[in-house]
Image (cartoon, rainbow, N blue to C red; front, side):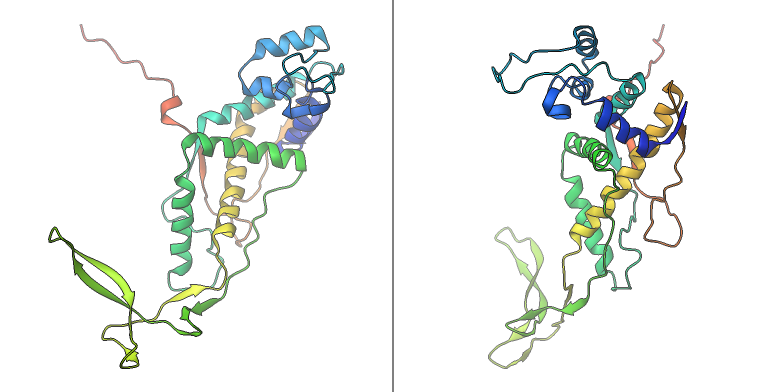
Length: 278
């Protein structure tokens, strides 16, 4: 029995075993072991194993020929099933999550950028987020490397207009329905050549940190997914022994801190049975 980490097991499964049945197209082909598992079609895999070779007649593409590749290893099938099962999961981002905790203090700017990036991520549908989890796991397994979590601190600069520091002021307005609201407007009196009363300056990052924040989010999603897969797969393996990983959720910090979690979507959880009143 071979001792492996979850990363090594995933790479072996998705590079060597789960492309079987996909011919020259490998994983991308609808008849590969992975695509059949992804479609929850174990019967097709059994059929493939019995035939040994399949001729793709669906598209009439004679150049996309098939070669006999054999049956995928049982351990790889267990891995594929577990990864495909991530389609029923979602990402839970904890309150106060700060992907830029290692950056210098920016008086709330970094925290605001993180909140905005998380909001942008959560706009995606649950199905898209689940597909993203699977894509991270499969993609990193094939490439054999972890998601990039590098995030060089961005410099803080004053917002300018036409090469000069910009001024802003909040103005209270009333709409046609009598409702009042505050609107941020230009706070410099061009005629008097001075800031208006109550005007203030604002600052921004010299480069948008959204990509770095989402990169660290992807990294933590990947680590959380690996931890979930370790627990699910460990007792199902017949030819491999899994060594649990101690990979940090926050390698950019001196100490490991909690991060995002992979949770089963409420709509996909089995309904609890309730007693029927007599």
